[in-house]
Image 1: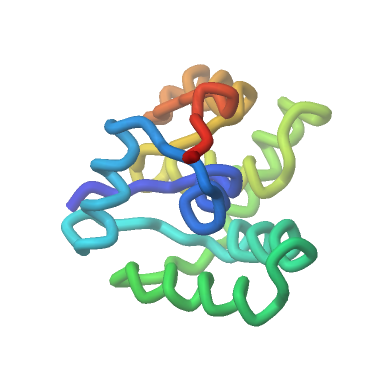
Image 2: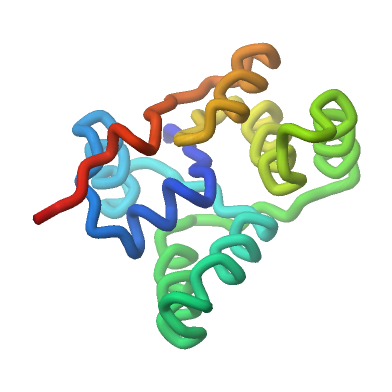
Length: 146
């Protein structure tokens, strides 16, 4: 089964945004929602979704969305020592460019040979340099629904 990691911005748009996403991403999202593909949801991303969205949407709504996201997965992979070291190594090479959460996304996607969906040029560029699969769409290209 195909596996995907979404950066926090992509998940926030999918969960809370009144934004249309391009067909190539909406097809992936529909496959995940229908449990035909696998969303990898790691703890650092959950934390970032929580702290970035609670101020705007409230704790209950955010927790409910996170629980719903978790229900889409067949597993919630634990991060291990190797993931932590790899994320740290990515951070060392990109000290001012990537958040630690982004580094964990890259580390796990690299280990699991998963596709990252991102609106972040930094994630895109580092993923390409690491030979990690990435699908990038600039945030500005996502259109607001009327």
